[in-house]
Amino acid sequence: MKNGLVVRAIDELVDVLRFHCLDLGCQNVRAELYLSSGTLQHQRIPDTSHKCINMCPICNGTWKLTFLPVVRIKVEKFVKLLDRKYLPLVAEKDNLLNILWKDEKTRMEGIFGRKTVAKFNVGGLFLQLIANGIIILKKSQCGTNLE
Image 1: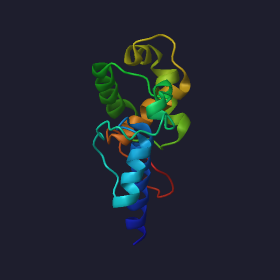
Image 2: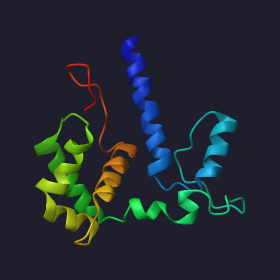
Image 3: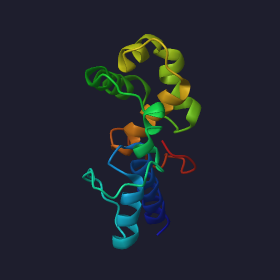
Image 4: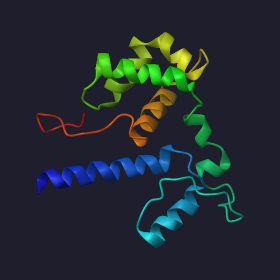
């Protein structure tokens, strides 16, 4: 029973990350659909005339300040490196961010296609990798942390 609750909690956390970290359309429209149906849509909501009048981060453009565009092939190479060299690891903020921020600084420039990147942009990349299921959260062997 306890294991099932942990799995459900992780699934719900990933749903929250999908809602906030992926550009799948107006967040207010997506929230309305969620509240009316009870399920979160995982595909892009088509643009409609019903927008939130620039109240959500997607519609007002502030979402793009945190989640920068990336060079796909560089991200794919980085994910392969993660798998070989760094994973599994306890999913703490500094563990994840420091992989790019400290250990792989030149790789970070290639991923984002620019020399200057804020640390919260690196965090945004990892949140998107988790939200897309590329990095998977699971209960650690000792049972007290997520990895």
